[in-house]
Length: 239
Image 1 (tube, rainbow, N blue to C red):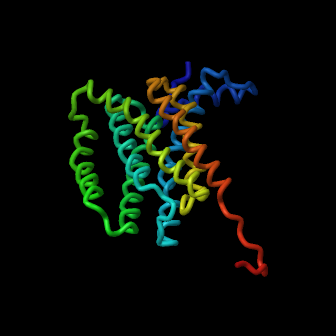
Image 2: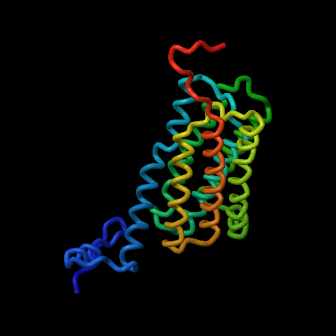
Image 3: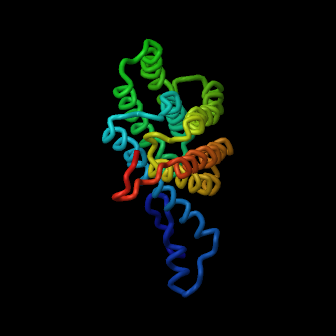
């Protein structure tokens, strides 16, 4: 039997051997490989997923239409999700994007704060509390039962992270400075992550988090497409 050599947890031997015989690989060998490839693709894409949103804010020097609370809750959700997956020992391809998304989400919140001056006392308190508690959660230095409760709550956190933004878009009939590309990538990534989580036999709570991501990101993406103003025609006089 040929040695089952693996690269980054991916076994190419079985699939390549089957294809070399002119046969289509069986799903038991093909699906895990596809899952791993998609997982690493999401991790790679996640390194720049929030970059369009960051650049749009910096370019326009405006956070018009953005819900600060939504982005703050997103940081909390990513922190809990990353800590949970790390201490559950899941393969990096199944959760690696959380690390990159967390870093970008923190940068994004910092930029939003910068363009939302002056900051209120409550905002400073929220920021300081996060800086004090986040390292403890990421290090896993909390009771296991509390850890499970935190992870269970992060689904609600991601849900409520999107609801204020969805409501604000609906109320204003505008999505302001929200980036179409960022939410398109969020939506696509969530859909793929549902498949990879199921394939990697991740806990059902992890799968449900991805499903919530599909629904919420899909809703905001739809709003961006619905409410975005068409570019004025060249040469046409506008009021």
